[in-house]
Image (cartoon, rainbow, N blue to C red; front, side, top):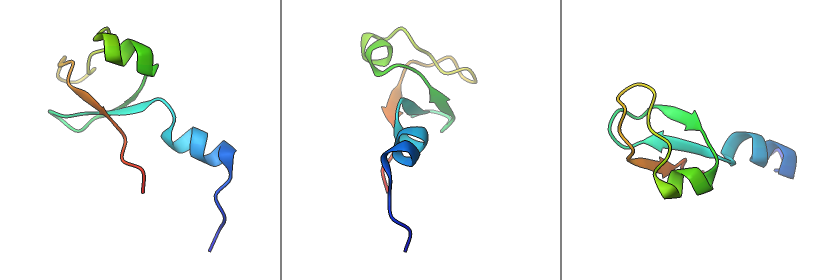
Amino acid sequence: MASKFPEAINRLQKNIFVCRNCKTKLRAPSLKVAQGKVSCRKCSTKKLRPKRKK
């Protein structure tokens, strides 16, 4: 098994959110997502969740 290292985890998980409506991934600062300033590019909804960590 490959070991996890911080650079890879940051690249794959940090600041990535998934639209709850159309399941599109986008990268945005978590503070702006919490304030509701970021919307989905595809469907324009503001319902976003963090990407699931496997």
